Length: 177
Image: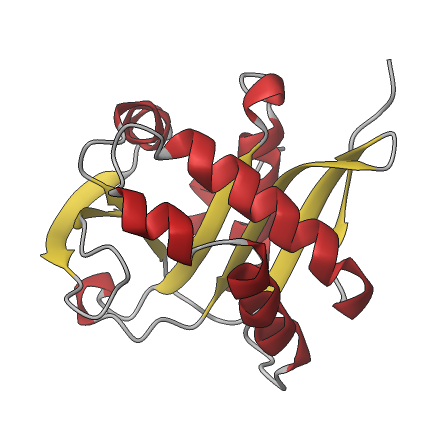
């Protein structure tokens, strides 16, 4: 079996990251998101989004991809948060694993690397949002001792889902040793 590699994504990865993001997002929210969200959050939308993020001069942002045999099987992003619900903690902005590769430690490994990045950026903790009905993700975060610290609905979102905020105040607890 090939060994998984985690690396920083760059502009050369935009198309592959956008395609992976759409595929994994649609699988994750297949029974939760309304049809218009699927139509709007397509590959061109995600390509534009990831081009902007990876082009930005944002020293706090990191975007990672996990690869097996050159195929993206996971991705994660972390950086500064503008959400008051995060309480000044660094933001885990996205964390997705290919449905065919779940339960192999990929999400855990990505989260570990994101926590290391946030610690190096002097954040005192990490927080993320998860759709209230996303039971598998909630179970994953709870298994890693994430605490629910808030909730919100983003009225500006394409899909104004009800989100739970999970937080960790000890970033070292997320680091794989």
